[in-house]
Image (cartoon, rainbow, N blue to C red; front, side, top):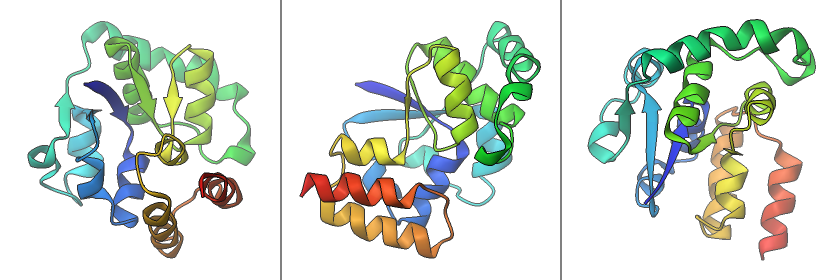
Length: 165
């Protein structure tokens, strides 16, 4: 089964879109760095481990790799894309590299770094493009995410969905 490593914002998007149960029914596994999970996800969304989220350890070599990424990339990231990736974001990228799998993120700056580091990336729209949700369910979820003040590229998401009809 395909493993995807998630950062925090994808799980927050799924929760805002009322898609958490659907996410864990998909034919893939989802993992997250343990530190990121315990600091950012578990306090507001406990029980995701029981739903199938794999809380994974980042090995020492990849923790060191994550720690050097800000110095290597942050000065090159455009401010228009929002805040620079956090330490926990870089841990998610490092875990993706460690496990040789796709990083699931909606963070524009983290996507830039992941691409430069040759890590495959998929976002919320990618889940839709891969038809892992029905188009109607995706439109409903996007409306809930919008109402929940999530930050997605709304015109692009709607364009993708309309093309799938």
